[in-house]
Length: 321
Ligand SMILES: NC(=O)c1ccc[n+]([C@@H]2O[C@H](COP(=O)([O-])OP(=O)(O)OC[C@H]3O[C@@H](n4cnc5c(N)ncnc54)[C@H](O)[C@@H]3O)[C@@H](O)[C@H]2O)c1
Image (tube, rainbow, N blue to C red; front, side, top):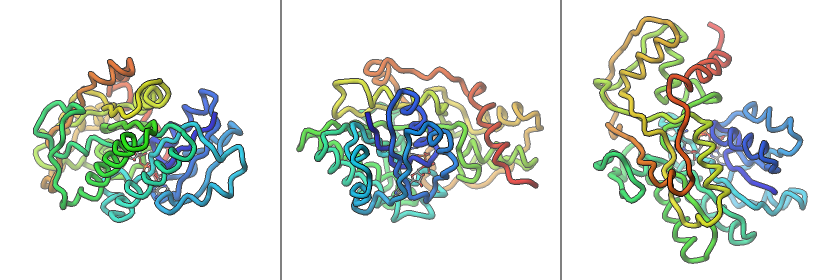
């Protein structure tokens, strides 16, 4: 059984490759390394069943012609390529729009050609700054279409529209996972998201930067839990056209997170306040009823158990002072 994983060298893509390989799949990872790191794939390569294809999935997928025959027809495609953190998509807005529009179109074309199943990585950002709380899959969202986050939020909403239209119009087996904030080993320290930002600052002995009053909440899902949910969505039968939230409903304020990170690192809590950036959502929390019903899934790892291995991975990556 062969799977393609786009964005394989990234945080989530590399963990998904590891999981597929553990389950006996052969995997071809496609990545242009624009935000990823090939070192994330060291364990995958050691299996002997992993191939890295360096290519931009926004361009036509001509790289398939160069692959040996046994790597040309996947049973499953996980389309995870996309800059994902505000710092990355702020730096790469047009590339972000392209990979979610054109990259998704190429993935759909492959699903039509080969009959493979396709899972699209979408995001809780589709809900924008939500007016409904917690967010169910039926909520349409409250998104600024021209704001600083639009290149990501609207790109994902387009990708969702394209995939669901393709399922209806062509009968492909496409599925969508709306991922809520996820953390764990292999996150980049400099990606600007709140957990790496807090851990990096605390490890360097610097104050933790809190935007606004710190009362805004986030829910954080440990990567192993997320991968389990995605693996179930990708492999269970009868879920074509389904869109499922996967995330941890445990809600923490940013100030609570700062306290927890400092306590786990054994450093005094020092906070530096900055103004809230535009369009920063104030509350975000998944309703995971559908994931429970369809996938028999719920998260198992609480934040205080997921943070220590995450911090250990940041320690390994911290540049020497
Ligand atoms: N991490 C989260 O909390 C989170 C939350 C919601 C959604 N997601 C989605 O999950 C996916 C993976 O996110 P991540 O956190 O692992 O990000 P990441 O930046 O670590 O990984 C993305 C990978 O995609 C690759 N990539 C980007 N554009 C590409 C292109 N045009 N062609 C080929 N490769 C390309 C990058 O090099 C990188 O390896 C993204 O689609 C993201 O939108 C992530």
